Amino acid sequence: MTENPTALLLDAVAQGLEIFDLGRTLTVGMPQSPNHPAYWHAMPRRHGDMTRGDGGSAANDMISMGTHVGTHVDALAHVSQDGKLYGDVDAYEAQVGGKFIEHGAHTIAPMVRRGILLDVPGTLGVNRLEPGQEITVDDLKATIAKQGVEIRKGDVVLVRSGWGQHFDNGDGDTFRGLSTGVPGVSDTGATFLADFGIHATGADTIAYEQLKPGAGHGLLPAHRVLLVERGIYIIEAMDLEGLAAAGKYEFMFVMSPLKFFGATGSPVRPLAVVGA
Image 1: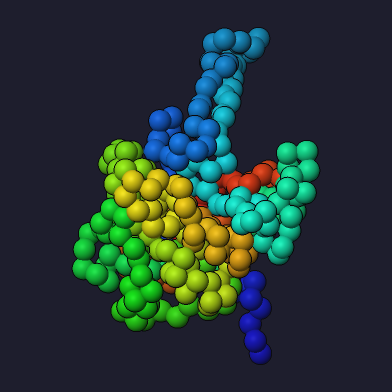
Image 2 (image 1 turned 135 degrees about the vertical axis):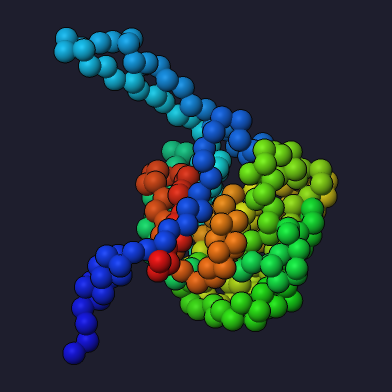
């Protein structure tokens, strides 16, 4: 008799799971794209500002930020090409009252899927890739072969460049790479991954893809391929160092965007779950 999948899942949880947090801690002043409103955290009510009759007190805070700041997912409404969103949706007509009813962040379903990590520096024998270095199709193929993984339809594929180390050490200018460039896939690498029929892909960089030195965010061809042409979600500014160090290349990927109605993206806290 086939065992109940729910029972198998609960049994796995009971035996213990190892969870890798792939999201960045949100802090004021953290590195981010200059194209988006910065993260800000304030506390309008502190403990002691109001005290109840029994001596109790509560502190309240507020947050403001762009939806593409910190670890976040791009909704399909984020990028258009020649006036069109994914599925030939008219980008101008889709902006109803400043909100995207179609392809907005509220339409991104929670993800509980098979995840794959492609540790490109590990394959190339370096700590991290160079500024502006392209992750080529050959690099991706070599990493798949070295790790012995198989990319399947519906997977979430995460591409490590090692560039997230600059976020960790507080070198925000280098992480942004506006003058020096940032490593990542180009349109050819994005097309290669998209051809597997993946659901989403992510990276440890500020804009997922290769940014050439001095080019800034002027051209984003991988975004065009993934979001507009293929309808594949992009997750950016991920923390992939711990996952790579542990050699965990296949895992259960768990992520749920906030249901911001009509938004072009959402902050997220992705998790990679493996058996302990």
